[in-house]
Image (cartoon, rainbow, N blue to C red; front, top):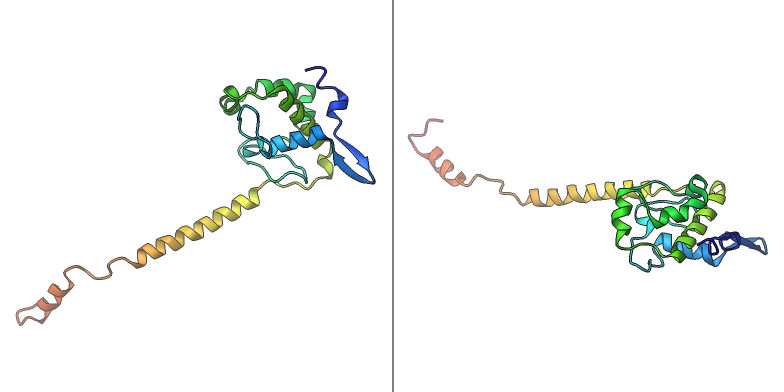
Length: 173
């Protein structure tokens, strides 16, 4: 792992004509994170639970911690942590589908890139889409209840019997 995790491998980006390009390793890590590229052993993509603030990455999950600054928090230890995550949900998810060396290196490079560029990125959490989806779902639920409720029986079953009894000469109403 030491040879694979060198500075040249983790070099996040290069400048070409004023435009920043991602190195192949960072791009691969981004693809693994977003689920564009599947993990070799079939583990779930990171974005299903986590978010990273980066303009190149869509808003991620709200179920777990934001990983934008995970590289600065864990530094070089992140690759080892990816090998044996200690959080219960991740233990279950990756116990039968561990990440390969290449996947850990790529994800580490991506997390380093995200950490280095976090100050220039627009923060997005996916909360607005979650909120909009909830409101739309609630409106659809109300509409469905209204459709079902409008087809209910509006008269009593014995309405005709009561009407005839009212007309009878011995009715006391």
